[in-house]
Length: 332
Image (cartoon, rainbow, N blue to C red; front, side, top):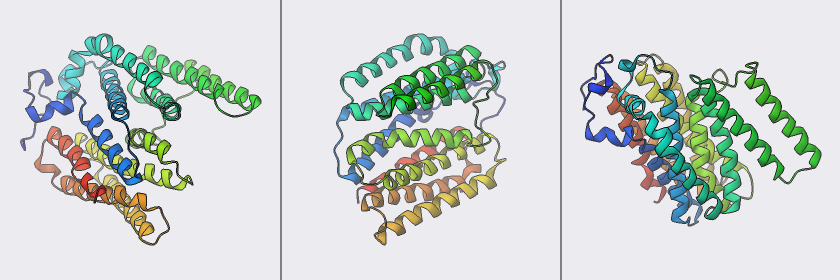
């Protein structure tokens, strides 16, 4: 587990160890999302139906399947792929034609028949942002895929605006703005990649955090917007440490100073939230998640400090485990 895998060894001839399969099959992200959603629900004193957890897990899994499959479409040298992407490159036709479409149909049925309407509209808005994310980063190697995701996001945005409780004039203006963005994107006059403003890792972390907090944000019905914003930001920074750490490890530790600043900033923010709760300035429902986040940041720091002892694959697994192990702190 601690042996370094040769970087240029063809991925299809490497043997995948048993402990790496959950990562290869993209099962780690749904597990993290569902467990953190459960921790947030407990902190808010609400009980979510199991189908909400199943819907979140399935949606998260589909997004990761699309993200990792689209990453392999423009690959020219298969030998340079890691074990994870080599798997998606070999099975991309099965995934795109036989796995993802039925999963999307099941998600559609759950959205129409199972998910409460308030949660549904928040989930649809998040789905539009995910579509833009996939178009911005994952589908850049395929113009057709990129245009499909931009079209879905644009048309979905217009549909969502038509159902919002705002004036007709505002709906018309915002719809024209959305359609204008679509046209500029199709004409290649607009680069929707926002890497210079918000790096890919933090964008993905923000979307992931928004997904984890969608149900609790609706059912908890907070009196002010401060609590859900702080809660989402707390998870965004935590998940950002995870994703940025993995990126740095894959890049050969070339950006470790920026990662150290991100970890220290996250630690400071978590401690500030805990201090605010202790002083009575913030809602007590933030205490459990912040305590679990504190444990996760500290455990991530331990994994990061020992990063040279582990292979890239082992580091990925340990970084994800660091997000889960401290979760019991949210219940104490």
